[in-house]
Image: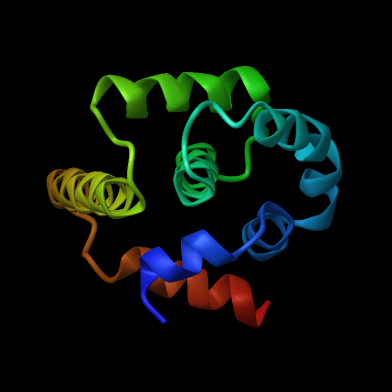
Length: 125
């Protein structure tokens, strides 16, 4: 299954369950439901991509419908109206963010593998 197919077929509840802890889901669920009810003249796969991008951008911080709408406006301004262009946008930004993180770690004297090591320790603890 391709990423585009997955984004077209998955529902937002599954995205929330996969990407957020249960207490965060309870706090954002209503806003996400309202966001999806509005449809924003975009295919469901693009709305799902917007949700994924929002969760990745905010991390464990909570977000609301206004934030989701802002991300939607950004997508529309950048003429992102298909699932494939949404995926390209997310991956391009992810690669850019990783490069910035790597550069910041290098300037701080922190090795590239440090974040993965810390994550592994957290999972073991």
